[in-house]
Length: 456
Image (cartoon, rainbow, N blue to C red; front, side, top):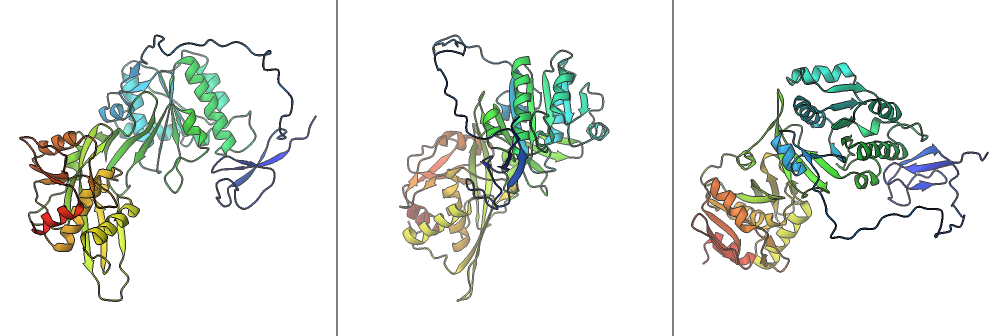
């Protein structure tokens, strides 16, 4: 019998090395190689006869009949929106987020809602004892929900238990990093264990028609921990975002094979658990006083959902010789540097002797490139101490040439702004207004500067 060979697996990217080294040669991360004992890892050199030994598979055309997958709506509208209508039978969903952000609370609430509707729901916790989960359920008012609960970490034990009865409509594994498969050597949480455990659970869900939900840990940079292949194995990847110091949480769909991506659900963390926020636009807009400089409202678009957020800028002039600081919260710092460069090179505004602070109110994170014009308007307002009109919103992408480029779904953005009482919009020149919203169009960023400074 061949002696098992040692191998070293990178816990960041999953690459395998024959000997330990301080830095992974593939992802360049330090101190991520962990020793695992596996089988013979020498390359397989046997030749295959590609015309025999396998089984023939059926090939079908693109025009074959397709049945849309059935969805299980949880009754939590924000969760169902992010999922594209609810959980899908025989699917796998991965949800990640910072510790304490509310992942377990959200899934416990969803599991209770489905169980109360007559669905069989199994909740397996690998991090907490069963009594701890029951106590949380009582605090949330879910103690009477017929959810089947277990505290286990063995994948074999879980699948053996579930195989003895009818398959559950929903199976929650909290978390996949705590699961252990006896088919693979290594401690729970290693790349091989996470991959093997997830593969066994996903195979069960596909064969038995259960909606599998895996909770995943995240790394210090916010990405889901474990092998990247885990995100490829599942059908849907959800990210639960938010600052623990803020009460608001955003559930964002990063990947969805059964629906659109970048859809969001907004929640508020309260004493009784997570509650839905029906109007997130009103949530992210602070009380704006008349005549306040450095403040602009931006109609962001998350999937098909417009959300109004407030962009706040502060410009502080420094004495000569001091090094100016740039600080950004909720937006890309590299994009702020680009906007400042365009304002200086194309519009003649000087920020080189000023400290610049930019904040997106409410703990919201903006990724929409259409926020460029709103950020520029806030910076111009803060530098010139001229307020942006309180009834105006701004949107548009800025090119390095200073051109204001059109953005997608301008009408949808303005419609949401009109609902909250805004009457004017500053955007690209091609944007068309209507009775509810008047548009000031700008071909270049310099035209916006002239407009705000009263030059013409």
